[in-house]
Length: 509
Image 1 (cartoon, rainbow, N blue to C red):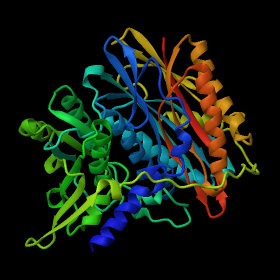
Image 2: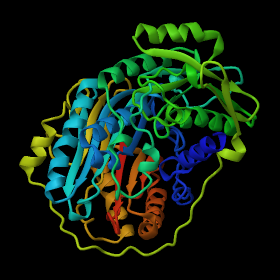
Image 3: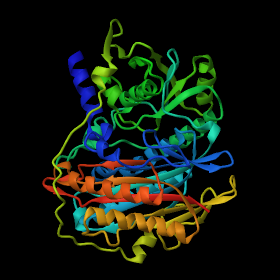
Image 4: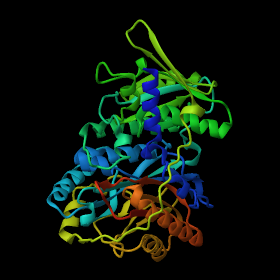
């Protein structure tokens, strides 16, 4: 049994979606430092300095596979996930963008309706405005839609929270929704072709619970009670309870580990196995690394917000990932794994095959369709929106009275990208972003990106070319990459989608 569990855990942590095993050696070429950068890639979100004691958290992510399999829930949980990436840093979300790429067949039209409904319902319920984005159609997406969501949040620099555990003896506190069987294997699903569809790998959503979690975490950020906070995203409890220790080990040089008592995890499904508890990707959950002396205050805060809050483990100094599970209420099953042996720095190499141009049927959606989509979204909630999707253009403007400035957000478009080579395409995308900021007299602070590609066997060459060109553009224009996401395996049988990088740049005016 122990051997089976270890194998499954290693498979989850080594999956493309979790480990970036095929892409991280290329991503290392991107410039990530700058005068305004407080936190670059490697955390839940990037953070740039706004001045006057304030900072902006920003991130973009994909939810392509789940949105194709179960469009409403897949898109809704994509919004929920990106929002948690923002407020797990202590930041209050102030805006969302969504980028949609769909095929030209009938299935794609049906998917689009449900995806838009999912995005609208979640964002509107939580109360975060959808301030922009875009949509394009192309036959390359007939069997793999692209659904990317970006989010931005404001945080006082003194309140920034990182996803790490630094001190042995501190608590691991589970907060938010109960754990169920929805989303088990989600990370592995997103790391393979869509030849076989299993809707059980898609999570269920509860935006009203997310709103409570958001408020509780923002309140917690105003205290000094915690050492870290981590969203339970891909690979669920397993990834969050290991990731905080891995970051802590890197920062401190200490032989940190974590001990997790699975019977203390609140559940919504009876009889869940240790693997199910560890790998479930149930939504609206967070892991708090709490300072032990403030345990009662932390639990009381979450009780005030009517949320589950349980101490499920502790930070150790033995370098072990320990799981303790009371199998039959009589005998504990204990599994100890050494961090250095199990959670390795995974790498996978692919042949750098040049991208082959595809036959493409690119369609720019009519204005009435774009208008109908944006009318589903509340883009004025929060009262910061100066320019939203009601006006044309690949940019948005948010008011930041905290720093007496305005935030300009620009993004790339698909014009000129239909069948171009990857390097030329990313150069065009970067120029679209930068030129809009320059036109509006905004100083660029940083860039986040979502890199959507097909199967690595025929697309990693295009990915490498895209990274090389993007790195050169960023360096020559002094615009750092502060966060991002890679989505590979957007493929069905032998067809990979065309390279679809999405760039989002932010600046102050």
